[in-house]
Length: 221
Image (cartoon, rainbow, N blue to C red; front, top):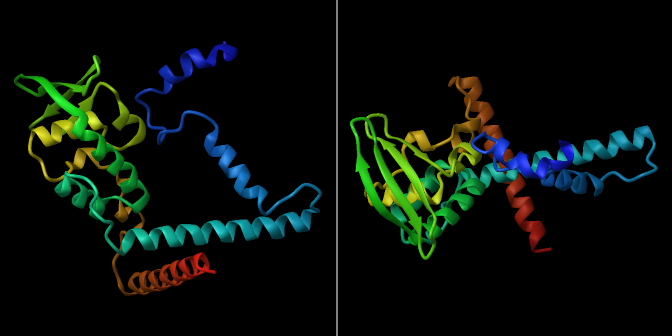
């Protein structure tokens, strides 16, 4: 059964939240990054020292990414300007770049038909010059969207079919039901707001700004 995993694995994980991972690519990338700091033949002490350097390197990268997400607005590149601007204020920079690719493809989406029931509206959506279609349901009471492709459930970002329906409904913001908390800029904000935490936030902001400046300066060296 394991040898035939390519026949059933994709069907098993379809509709489950795996942040878009389907293979061992993330582990391979991690091994490649660690390989820059750790090599065969290291003694235990050398391994600990170099592994600590790797952890510091990764922490610095996270700080830089957080700073670039918190400060500065990306340039609008799609015709769906309102949705793109709203996504830029909500998503982290890396997730926003992924969502912008969806917006770029939204121009190829057309709503073939729609059928309204007592609880939801069902849209039949197709891509330009493609025979296949997908079904997108919209619950107007709770503003909830679901697509038969299940990309939202698998990756946590609205699919191009749902975006096509948002455009059809003339929406300029992304509904809360389509925004995953872990992909937003507020994911790391502390829940308690007092003087102690505010000082820590300022320290983190300064550290992230300093790390981003160092990262940018190294690019010109």
